[in-house]
Amino acid sequence: MGFFYEATGLTGWAIWFFVLFALMAFNELGRSTKWGGIILFLIVPIGLTIFVWPTTAAPGNEYGTGTWFNWVKTYSALAGCLWFMALRYSPKLAKKKWALCLPAAILGINILEAALRDFQCFSYGAWNGAYVDNLWVMSGSWNIMNGIAGILNVIAICGWAGIFISKDKTKDMIWPDMIWVWIIAYDLWNFAYTYNCIADHSFYCGLALLLSCTIPAFFIKKGAWLQHRAHTLGLWIMFVMTVPSFADRIAPVSTTHNPKAFFIASLVSLIANVVLVAYQFNKIRKNKLNPLKDEIYVGSKAYKQVVQENI
Image 1 (cartoon, rainbow, N blue to C red):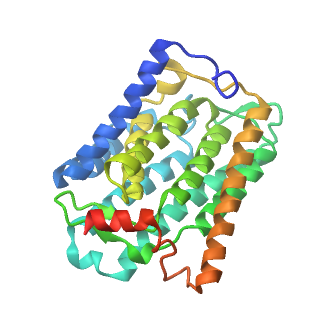
Image 2: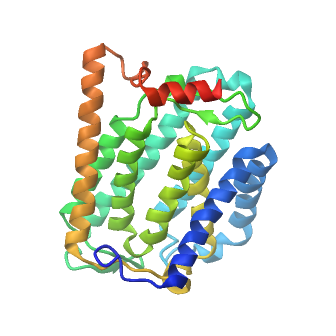
């Protein structure tokens, strides 16, 4: 904790674990029943949009939730949740290739939005740290490194044509080509992004939020990482837009504001994504694959396990 974050006590860790398990629990509710998903990702957001967010996420508010980025991120995440539900519960739609490419497009757009935000934070010129839109940021080379890492992560998105709906009662959206290699590279990039751009909130929206979708992808429902990610991201953003004081006043855990921490987080992110892209390009070249049509990891143990568990 001492290098990346200021120390926190038992209460702070208890709150962090509560956030982690609450996100995982609501994700399970949203994926296990159709009505659970409709309530969480359609009915609740409509009510919040009309009655709550115009106040709690008003432009220029003291918590920074009123920026264009927060509003765009909120609705793009919710759009992803709803589209994935449409694929899951409409067999005809799930068979159409154009419909299957949208999950990859939504994912790529979300990553590029964040990469743009990293470049924007560099443009602020806050070399010694400053509050911009009521959020503390420190500009530096790390913004450029991680922005590039985000672009590389988008380039490495592969195998969307192999997406299918699981045969069990939960009807999960399964993306077997999105194996652990890409997920880990994404997590390292996204943590660095939250650390760079939402620094003093990243204890929750970085560590807890990423684990809330990665744990289910590894141990609860393999192959459904993107569905887990969309659900937990949508839930977290709705919570932040509704209770914007949470990370600043209610349960704050700030970063150390140490330039070395920013640099190391983004350097690891960049290295991981360079290795990922190089590895995938080598497999594409070696096996003469079309990255826009073919699945890259089809012969791997992880790919085979996901398919066997869901057909």
